[in-house]
Amino acid sequence: MPSDTEPLMPDLQDVQATEPKGLTLLVVDDSPINVRLLATALSKEGYEVLTAENGPLARELALKHRPNLILLDIMMPGEDGFTVIRFLKKHTATASIPVIFLTGVSEIESKIEGFDLGAVDYVIKPFHPMEVLARVRLHLKLSIATNSLIASQAQKLRQIRKAQTSLLVTPETLPEARFGTFYESLQEAGGDFYDVISICKDIHGYFVADFSGHDISTGYLTSAIKALLKQNCTPIYQPGESMKLINDVLVEILPEGKYLTAAYAHLNRKTLKLTLVNAGHPPAVYVPVDGPARLIRMDGDILGIFRDVIFEARTLSVKPGDRIYLYSDGLVESGLDRSVWPQAAERMISACEAVRRQPIQAAPLRIRNILLPPEVPVEDDIVILSIEI
Image (cartoon, rainbow, N blue to C red; front, side):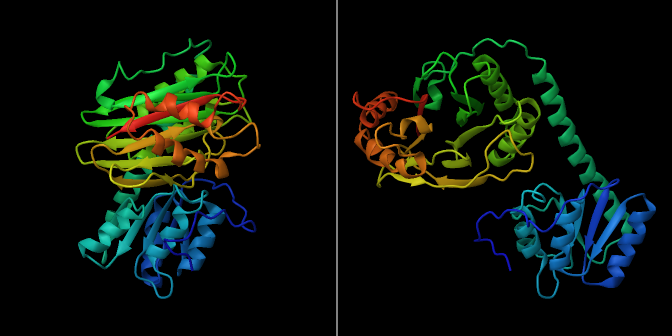
């Protein structure tokens, strides 16, 4: 039985997805009466309704049919609704399906837990079929609207023919973000990119990416990413949701086989909360003002290949003076011993400790020189983004 401590899991290989004919709903409840009541009411409105009386069957049907929305009972014998939704959110094929909980429990703790696990709404039993229908319609509309927004953004970005190379933001142009950078392109068309955005007062986003290959116009890529960051990194979206929206657009506009890895840091200096999202990128380094530097290792899918992706997000409570370092793999992959970043990222810890007393704007260049002295050949683009709380 899955638990909330298990790592992200791939889809079951023996379950083949089928394309739904229309809007498909999955009703999960151990009460045959409730299942029959909901199935009848929803079928009359034109929905194709799948039903399950237990958690294991619900998981199987969800993976096989990928319904547009799931109505899920919380209290079921054996495998409860919380366990089922944990499973669904860990699988790329089902992670984005809206889930409405059916519950006879009115305690606020259960509702909060449901929302934390990814539910979009809940209905208290005993329910009226018309209430359920109204909530189903609402969340289907929201889901369709989100997909429409993604398609609209992708269409606008397709119209970009020859985007000019975008100017990278500098610490002088956004001093309140308190950051430093180092950028070195191996070729004229660099494959690495960074951006710093002001989301609102006291909240900034920091983004570092590494594009596969150097054959797509740098201007096009940087302009596209900058536009997507501005459109989707807003107060209404959680950091992980912002990356999901950006990925959905990139899937539409990037040529086949092209992708990027990325790290995103969302810093709220008012609440002193830092949220990190990883998309197949080297781990960030966290240097607390009163503790040793350490890597923040996280899982996450790359951007631009798959529509159904999962990104791990981690929120840290930080203090003034703490630092975070984001970087590209060209910094830590040595040309001498042929090491790659999953192992070589450990080098960043000692380098970040060595520049602990350096001004935040000077730290990136010093780190570059520590890790890549003259005798070490540079074989890839390099980006270092330092952030100070």
